[in-house]
Image (cartoon, rainbow, N blue to C red):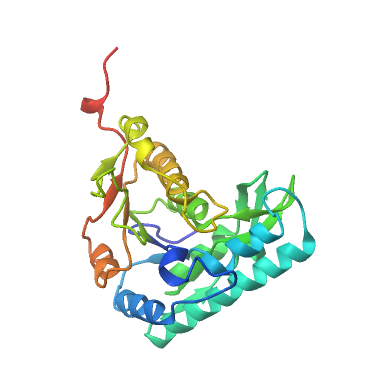
Length: 266
C-alpha cells in the first residue's frame, strides 16, 4: 500500500468552516480557505486532508433525497457541486505552496448500504510516498445496495486513519470542540463517559445530511476502539489552530479509548 506509513496525520476541515452552510447552494468562504492553506504550508510530514461539503453538498443531497433513494441526476449534481469546492481548496493549497491533489471519492470508493466497502488505498499511498497531499471530501459514491449513497468526510477520516495507522487525527470544526450545557469545551470523551455527555451533543443547526457533531463523535469513538488512536475536535475558525494542531498541540476535545484504570470493575 505504502512504502512507509509511519507518522501520517489526517486533518479534516469541516464544511461549516469553509462554506456558508446556511446557503441553499455553494458559497465558499474564500478568505478562510486561503488562511487555512497558509497554515498548512510548511508542514513537512505525511498528511491527508479531508474536507466537508457544506453548502456545496448538503442542500443538494437533501433536495434530491439522496439519503432515501437513488436519483442519478441528483447524484451527478451533488457530486459536481462538491467537486467544485474541492477545486477551490486544492487551488488555494497549491497557491500557498502545498503539493495538493484533489481525489474524489466518487472515482475511488464503493460503499455498501452507506458504509465504505472499498477505496483505492494504493493510489492514496502512492501519492503520499511521492510527496503529494491527497485532498478528499464528502461526496456521493457508488453503493452496492443503494445505487449511490452520501459518503461524509466524517466516515472517510476514521476509515483512512485505520487503514494507514494514522499517528494524529484532527477535526477542524466551527466550535471549540464538543461543548457542555454551559458552552465550555469537554476535554475528553471516551466510551465510559459518552452516555453522560451525549445529551449535550446535537446535530447541525443548518442543513446536514451526515449527522452533525454527534455523527463526528460516534465515528471517532469507534476509531478509538479499533485503533487506539486519539482524535481532536477543535475550532478551525480561530487563526493558528490548524497550524498548532499540525505542530503537535492537543487542542479542543480529545476522543480517545477509555483507560483501563477508568473502566468500571464488575
